[in-house]
Length: 407
Image 1 (cartoon, helix red, strand yellow):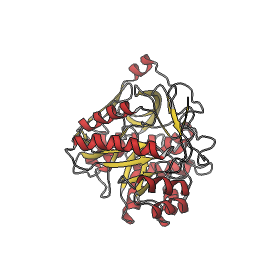
Image 2 (cartoon, rainbow, N blue to C red):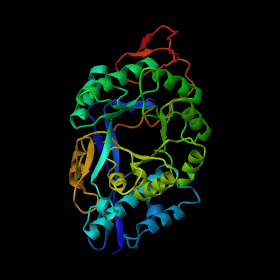
Image 3 (cartoon, rainbow, N blue to C red):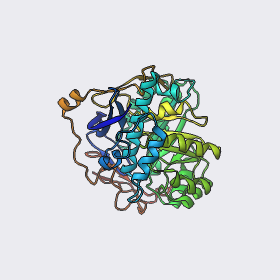
């Protein structure tokens, strides 16, 4: 079997509501989803959900090769990009191709990937993650009632711009999950997407912990700040979770060595081989791992085979336009199917016919770091919820600045 070519597609995830984080919001809820399809001379094609930046340069490393040699082909792709570097979206391209190759390998073996990788249980524990900073209280409650109806009893909220607002929203979701769980204490996490300095992080989380029990605080400071993340971990009760934006084991090593990460995360777009290697590194330090991303299908299959998987992120319960996946959610877990490979099918004609494209990225996008991130004396969040009033209050717990309203 030989790799003969590839195709790239772009579809969208339609949330039907604003989605975003402390950095910004997609007001229309339409988020781009990039897809790579790898073809072989035996008619088996593999699918990878991830970017295709500089794909011609990366694909040259695997063209004509046997796709079943996945891990050595992964290293070939890294070697082909080492001069300019493989970080960022280039690492995502490598990850998308890597995931597609694992899909091909499992299809050729006639097995779902989770079984090929040595998984015993097709169930992968999940937590709810609504990318919900742009929601009103009523919308927030409604969304997490849907998650709760699928048995999820842990939730991660987006926040980091206002202590009292974060406390209020966490309490709302706590009450929803507590009621659904018949009084059982739910799990709560807060993700601030690198919005703070280390002092802001400790002050903010310690204030929340006066009345709430947080499992983890996610990306409290910049992703590469080993000393800062370690200081936060020492200063709060909650675990520090980070890693979704780290690309390569060399970026994890200094954080793990500094005691700067308590829950090791990997993004779905970085690929299966990266997840397996980072999981082994984390396991050597007795650290749990947790995949990040919308429908992180490749990492869900891989998670069944590692001993230190903790829980996986469940974002939207719907699939991207034109994409079907052989899995469902019940009793708080992803349940993987028996389709050979990843169980992902792409309807290319539907994607083209839908012609659904996200709006051009603006400064209000979650993918653009705000100019004053980490340097806010007051919690000014202009434009974070388009068309709605957002309170501006002090970052101090006693609200020593009177609230105003901004549009």
